[in-house]
Length: 459
Image (cartoon, rainbow, N blue to C red; front, top):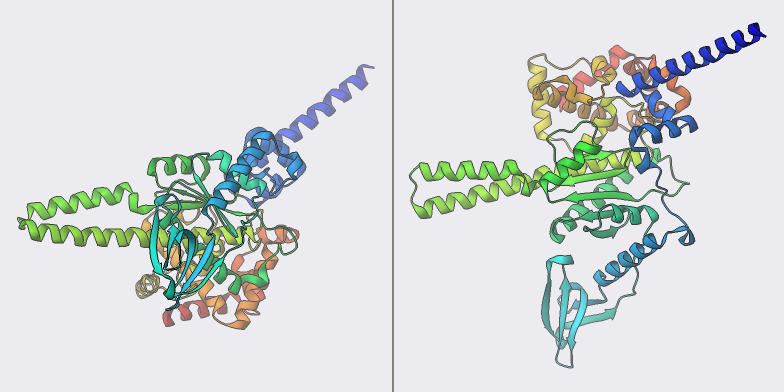
């Protein structure tokens, strides 16, 4: 009896030791950004532990894309009704085309045989009324009352930020406290990015037969609110105008025009103009020039961030990247930087200049090291801003090289399909990424590195 009890105790101790060892291994994977951690989170035990320990924002991932109407709570139904009403209220009711071909969509305020007073609304920012003579109207027709479907994720998104305005511009769902004009420009940028993404990467889509999750965009105008949210949900909070969270499946953007650094810089320049002894008209003119230049710089910075982080969102949402994040930094960042320019894939003079200077001084990061690099902080862990910038530029150049020739592009796409397949995880973790890519290019690592270096010199 004592012998049996002793064996039972040893067995329980062994099980406990194995469980502890497994927990330590999972913890180690989580700290090193190992793809096996994210693969584990997709298993049933992983999902249970993720909920207990709040790993990977599991609560956000658990929200289904949609739910039958009868399963919604009373609160959720009320929120959905309010969202529908607001979308309908913003939807234009009429389409008017003038004799000169100008097209307007909006509302009729007043109408008679002599003229039509037509109104265009600009979200919560106001409206513009135009009086148009009847003789100058070519077409005036009523538009059908249609709004895009509101999903369950949309409802929960709105409930998380009840004071923000909700916009639905398929495939995007947007919440913002920003002005209507800036939101519209940003959404047009994202829709343009989406079109270009499809033109380049449609062959890589892995979720064609499953419903695509709505692409959520959270747009802040308050800098402090953005940074609080960033600190909570971004694994590597950095001074940036936006980020994409794969766990939240959400693009989060901040309007740089309202940034503190912009206000501080403007104030410094204003004081400098005053101290230089310029006359009042001269100082006013210089101040206006400074304001225009700063505004342009802020808009461009927000635009680049929007396309870069928006590209991350598309690559993850459409399954080009794996759910267990096996891709190394060069691939994730190189593809995002490739999509930064307008149009996507255009040579970026600033990055070309950085590469040329590094090549002249023989400071380029060796290709094998660049491709094998993987860190929880990404390229930011390289330290100095110059090294980080060079890594991004080289990753962009490598993707640009692989996308520049149809044969190389097909081989590159086959490489991506292979890497994201969990069945190949063991081999990938123990292989040099350069060796693996060279295999798909039907080349050798040495030849691939030489051709890459030669391509940089020709940019």
